[in-house]
Image (tube, rainbow, N blue to C red):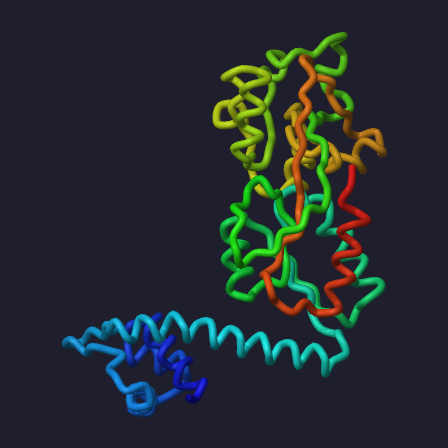
Length: 299
């Protein structure tokens, strides 16, 4: 059975059109039709019902497409493993970072690779966890470092705990709240609260600890996935950042930011982990990224 025939069937199943599938595979329509016909003859049954201008998979076609996806991905993985061995591990690093890890790792890692490993191609993706998981499963990313509380375990995912980082309230060094002898949660409500999207678990912790007004849907007024932008906003305004305290490490060390001791004391944390596809061959160059994550993702 020819792997190309399976790839042609997958393209046809995805596009639903001979013309679009032929264009995607850089074929003429007659050539694509011959490829599908050859596959049908080899398997001994029809894979497509051609109803007018529509093409629908037969029950056999649906079964073949499901198996073909795995076969094509396995073949691509085999080619990738051979390429890694032939190139001695020199290649590319394609990773996705969640909001917290992105704020702590992205710029330092780019600087580290540019200075010490300029021959390695590095691509870092930011975005919603759901989108990054789709990219990982599509082999567009090699690994993710994300908040494990925002991910649902699945058989095709290899999930490794990396670190648990303490959460806190961060403000600029000249913030009015720092002049108060005591800062209660109610005092925070007079100022904008900046945060990344929070997991359901953290949301429950906030509400259980501070009451209904701590629900992030009502509490948060400035929200985005980029922790760095939130920290910059806090540095320039009276907004208060709610999130991983380590994200403000440099600003606190420089005297630009400070951590608020809000009462009653809130003890929460974010669990960050390393996520890859189970059974996938990891490029040797990814060891650089793993080591960097272990050294820099810390309180």
